Length: 395
Image (cartoon, rainbow, N blue to C red; front, side, top):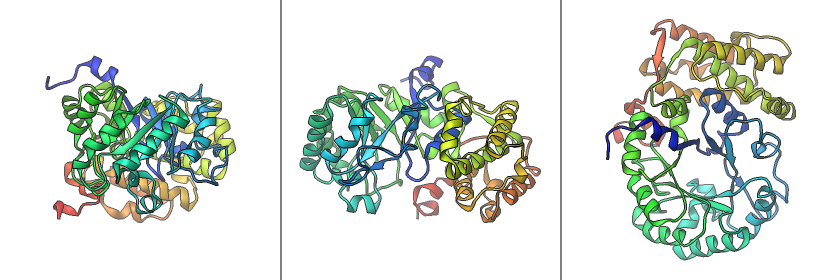
């Protein structure tokens, strides 16, 4: 394989935003689109039970396939999770009237989900997984659903049997996060299992796991050169401009102006969505979030001004923004990951200890005064332990 990727390679691989529970709500998906425009996104799973939802999904769950279908620059894959094909069919049916397929989560490792016999719990017994996916195909239809899964429950040696089950289905696609449930987010994703899946399955395979920058993307492609789709989750939190980096094949630098306006916009978008979701969706339908600013300061200035005027009714500078605690908690969540792409000076804990966005913004400004005017966004491997669940130095 070549040790570099051509421009045509970047264009031929669709790179999307991975679903992350509690993170990638519609406000966050739209923010990533404004920052660096993923080609597609997946919703976090909608938990489906016998009683919920009942035929209708929440209006904000997958608005991009309904009212916003023609105004957002990315496509959306709605994801469902449950352990009953009958219940999943009930919710998939109305979604399939407006989208080509729905994704079924068979990979979530959380104890609560596993305890309810959903998510990665379905991988524990190949016979149960086979019965579950076959009934899904019978009820939902061939090529009308996809599966997102891990490479095993306890260990990777389980994967050949699971892959045999999946290869027998007629799926729209398979998304493989090549870690076991036991590994959660530790160790390294087994990309060779993604490559194996492309050789065995007759439908598209979507890669997932450990693509954190241009170099890791190149390494992934060298192992998985038949993959035409890739999703990025934690890598996007650590570098929200990663979709720009990978689509252009060039590293991205940001100024304080770009970074601060991007974070201020994230804060306002979260607060707007939390407090007035109906008006938020109305503004989205009118195209407020349809443009992408990338790392262009002028574009961010214009976007931020339009955003705050739409929400507050008049212009408010970033240092004067007031948002509620829930919205500010989301800002600190995104900062906790993003700071690792900026380098060690930004890992200081003071910003995470602030209690308001105004204080956060002022301390961020002071921190930037001690740094270079522009900062290269990059992956720092020495900080991986902070986001994998492993202890420092792998201990």
